[in-house]
Length: 341
Ligand code: AKG
Image (cartoon, rainbow, N blue to C red; front, top):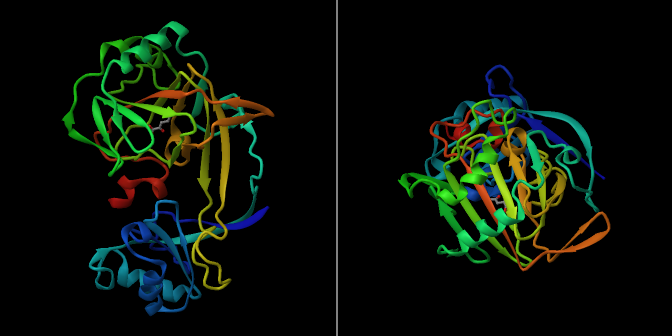
């Protein structure tokens, strides 16, 4: 078991001064090393630690020994172009340490078969959303269309192309309506009254992924500003495990006091669910906005002691609705709309 401290950083920062600053638009993913951060913030006082605020590499927590030093840095740097960082504009808030929590080290991860066992708010698994015949029809339809090869898997995009470099779509490049062979599936998706609202839910973007045996998918949260509240993913032809993880803020990074290096106390809550063929996973709410999802690169998944060999390929149909305005979710620390605002 690992003990980690966590931080929250409420938006109303002005009257909440603490010795910890949450800094957005700053981190290794935007070319700013921890040493650069230490050099800039160190001019305001003793910096005792620098921690990633999440996995994005673009947000950090900078800890000072004195509140007054954090206030000085806040006053000088927040919303201003920072000459030591090539003119980059940093967005700061005060960050509040929370009670340390015990976190499982996750040597062996229990695998859920039902979304009620997984117990992540907003994640639902529906078994047998399509019949065997519908599955064959859907596979034949996509196999009749051109695939685009990525380095490890093949994809097709409908409605709008998903751009992997930006993890977004180009809303000006409409590829056309979703094809009619999808209609039976869309009707079933829309029938999730109660979960998705009484009037059903419209989707206008589909990514089809083909995973060869042993290939998974790296951890990600679908970009908040790109897609709306509900993401539906139908598994066809094969099964896999999907894992979810939620980062404990402040649990890794450059801890200057304990002389820990980056990644030394990497710490997540992890959960996993088994996705059988013809099932549909719905990501919404906290599960869509605050949990990373990914597929381990396994040839065999061990589910409750049983070895389940993956088939030669798994095809997933991921349906999403392109967002038209900024995201206003309740998870600003994961939200590019609210960070960039
Ligand atoms: C994505 O396309 O972003 C996914 O997460 C696909 C998930 C899946 O293959 O089920």
